Length: 399
Image 1: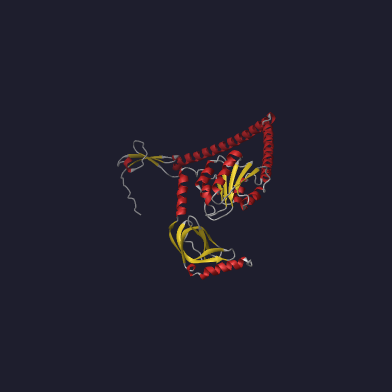
Image 2: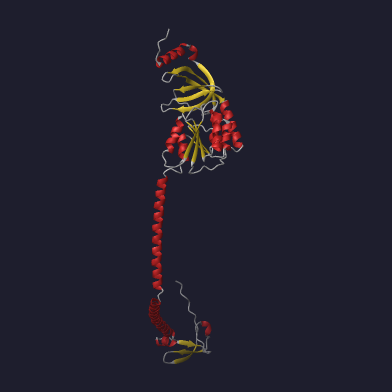
């Protein structure tokens, strides 16, 4: 007897009722490692809880910034079905951190090991204008479409080679390594792009494989990674010569030299044209300057200039001589007046007299004369001889 088919929504509702009917799923305690943490615009916290072989989605209907990728935790919550997608998840009520998970511990140890070996040191120069580009990705994935769409934005003649590779799962490691070897030996290219779309930490596990990272580093061709994840950087990203967070960003980086090349050429033309015009103006100015210099050094002009200079010097010398002569006459007149003022005969005419002692020395103070001594008194029109009867020193008045 053939059963009547039911709708997907009814199936999901039935599974959800089955879970709710079992009380063991109401209050679960599940241990695992946290990865792919995301906080939505509504404030909900989404993450993946996993171990070495399996994982499950979890949601907290609140913001929880206490946990980080790699934390080992025990979550308490209810197992339920998200009907819209037919996936089951744990609605978390409480989270208890118990340490750092083994998966992330091992990844950090691998990272340190590769760094010590020098595999994180970029050793190849990425060409600015590659003519042959090799892409390692899944032809059926979304990443290749984003890459080709970016490449089509430039008008360039580079060739594109696609190596259809697995980018997830157990066989992805060997597939990616074969792609790297292919572009290094069978189909040499100028640059290799390893890419895939976004995914969870578990989905990107292959890019943390040490063999993949080693082959990227050992590639003779420069390698650019464009793996669609924003939160974590894989070992492959660290060993690549350039890593970008998305396939589109990686494609844009590879064609950066071709981007807007016509606009760059126009800019160079404008710059060259401007510099040429400026140089011509500079040459014209130099020619005008040389013409002026030649005109200036014309013998006739030089002779006229010397004659004018001589006339100017002549006028300057004459003026200087007249001024100097006038100054000298004024100085002589001042000296003459000073001499007249200091001439004793002028003082005598003004009613003053001069007294000389017996030695014909001018009497200036009391020490130059003695009582009973004869003195000579000189006036303007006559002289007098006299004898000193008494010498009396005047007392200075105190003010």
